[in-house]
Image (tube, rainbow, N blue to C red):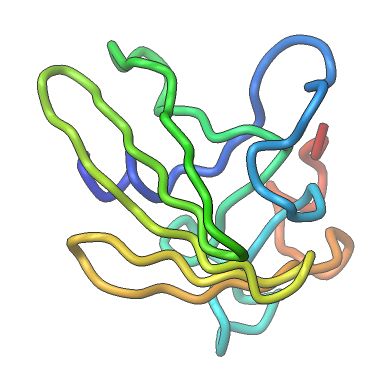
Length: 123
């Protein structure tokens, strides 16, 4: 659960956000080295302007601070807290580091993804 909380970059419900939490393009990100066509639950995340927690989790809103291109995100759910850093390499690539390691992602064109992600709205 802690990995999911720290790594979750998912679509938030509601109207468009006034300001994105991270300077990334909206869409699906797949771990570097994984072909877009081979994305799986273990290698894909979705960013739509905000960081959210798994559905149903009792969580506080993420606390985000940044210095340059490095964003620190603190999450707290059900008495557990985690911190992850997101190094923004470009508007279409980032590296996330947390207690479990370092994971690099890049934006994939949605049409190159397998189902169900090919058909899921990104906003």
